Image (tube, rainbow, N blue to C red; front, side):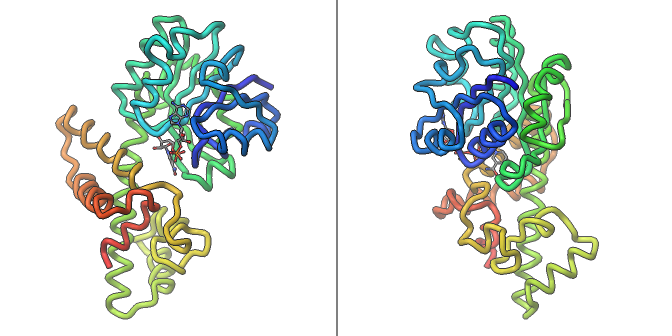
Length: 293
Ligand code: NAD
């Protein structure tokens, strides 16, 4: 079993670190919020006073942070990990960030002699808890193979998408599609309800028909249809609107870089941005249904 530093213990990082503990790894945790560290200490982790202190003698350093600026802060700069780390830990960034920053941090790591992969995840909080996340990885094949023993204790699908940054590109393509499917599912359900249909019956019909998709299968946005979905719990996240807006911004930046047409992703981004501006940023992203009521 390995010594793992885990930095960033939020909605996703907390349960991911807990699964590493369950698998028997020696996990040292750090987050800016001490209550989140305490929850992991109660499950057998050791807490540290900084990201660097958590990383001492670690074989694997895993970060699960909100956005690119947080990843830059933890790894780069005079007080960042890269300038101060000893040994040869494998660096695994599981945060969803822009591929440019992922490439920059990986290049800075390589300059200092560290192997690094970007390994963003899909599946949401439920999959983080169940240990069934999908990991989409970018970096050298050797680094990907080195990461497998810890990634498999947090997920069930491990993909090597390509060179540094490729995991992030795969992730934003997936999340752009997810935003389109979620808004489409919400508007179809609301249209049916506006015409007097029961959302449960309509969901069953579409699940057995060609409109079937992940949002209908496991994350129905209509309150009361699916007991465990955020929609049945006042849209408590889950995956926050703020984070979806961030991911759609990353997708738009990527589309500009490659001059790709993304009309559906662009429409979904506008809907989510308007929803956020109306004060719903901290709700689950399935709350987009409320914007269509
Ligand atoms: P979150 O906001 O719940 O957690 C982020 C944690 O990072 C917080 O606890 C925060 O205190 C901590 N943090 C921030 N800066 C730090 C620093 N410098 N040092 C230590 N800790 C620091 O976010 P989340 O939902 O866990 O998401 C994390 C990442 O995973 C994001 O990039 C998100 O886009 C991605 N993601 C989220 C989901 C989801 O369903 N929530 C699904 C897939 C991917």
